[in-house]
Image 1 (cartoon, rainbow, N blue to C red):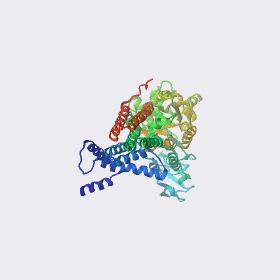
Image 2 (cartoon, rainbow, N blue to C red; image 1 turned 90 degrees about the vertical axis):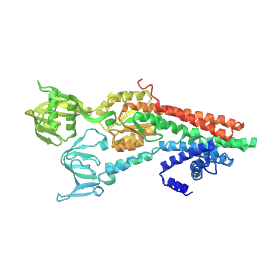
Image 3 (cartoon, rainbow, N blue to C red; image 1 turned 60 degrees about the vertical axis):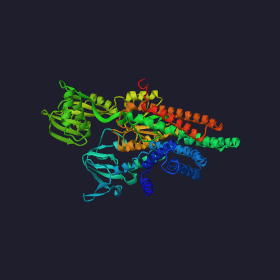
Image 4 (tube, helix red, strand yellow; image 1 turned 180 degrees about the horizontal axis):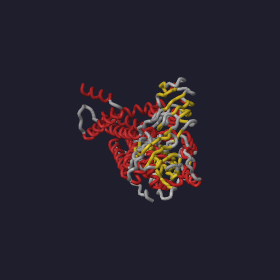
Length: 631
């Protein structure tokens, strides 16, 4: 006895999920022993299942009824359990308890909530700031103590602690946290900077303009919180039908008892009408569909995520890192010097940039090596010019590589024709790097974030699935229109901050349109939370975006998205078939129970067989393939 008591104490100390699994295994074994007639105790082994699995179901049903008059599927299950025990059908009661707890455990496994990611946003907020005193000395203080008007110094690699305006210095800021832009933005005196963004290189001094709860990063946290709070959760189909099932079952049992005078028939009705197969219809299909999605690179973190995806009418896309690769790449090199090839200009620029700390300089070097496979020429007398570009001597020639302001300051003329050609690229969201040799303009390089190889075909497949794609991007109007044109997206909203994306998704939902959002950055987290279904790029996406989403695309293969959408629709078809079958079987069984053909034991086995068939039908989703994928 002491050993049994110690085991029970050990079970109570276990975590919730582990304890439920262990109790379910013990109960299942006990029911099998009862069916086989084996016993280790002076009572029917099925009592173990009734205590471990049945009592929690009954307690939950009572609490729901008493506190909120909430009639769910567990109410009918509880009635069937109690009726079976009263009439001495202990095996039937234990078998029903095990089946229902199995369904509940599957539901619990599939609807486990994903972390909100808010904790990581809080950690992203800088904890300290470098304040400059009136005498010019630096003082490190907690960032929450910074006040509007304080002078702050930010060193290379540091995260900006509060919103403000640069007073002196030049640098390049990674603003992906707030805008999702792939390109770093050069900043100088008079430019605004946001908290949470990262100083790439070059120290600068700034004046605080928004601090504490008013700062950009704190506003982002509040957006994520409010978006999550406003998202409606789907109620289980069995629970939605529970009230009617309870009324029908009780009425049928009562009428049968009154007409026949045989309570055993009434109990049989309650047992066969116990919605085991109906309760299993949804979680088993979801589990199988999740297994299928995993094979295609999707981590489904929300149990009802695929159910919501099946209803989606629009999919809103972030651009950078989602439809594009998210990193700048050289897409064009042009020479204007007679006898000098574009490749030579490219090589000279890469040579001058090879010692640069600027992200664009590193991108040029990386692109040159990837495209040509050649060694980069060496350089001498390298000089970094913050906010402008670089200077170096390559093969005896003085090479300047930088923006138009650099060329103007060095007195290097840029023709109107060249400016017009460069402006066409700038309007598309590209970055132009001018290159001069020995104080004469030699040409230019164009860098851009390029679309993923399969993005266009993926969009076309979604359209054939009756999904309308929408582009929500922080890029300017012309850059957004350019990428949308390449990818066949008609609806485009440019220059979107996180709150703008939130508003657009909210506007669709107000029109009763179900919306899916797919993105990769921290700036997408509020929209991922707000949308009916959020999908994050798990490979290159931020941890916060992944935590905010319902589904993560682990390997960033966006071409798999149509399969996921088609799978979700197929899953819903399977669920409907499961429900239709289970309800039909129940009504046939209830007729047989009314006529006395079925007793409680046989009735329990019949509806158990129905549960098995539902599970088998759901399992077919594991290897389902979208045959229309390449239409």
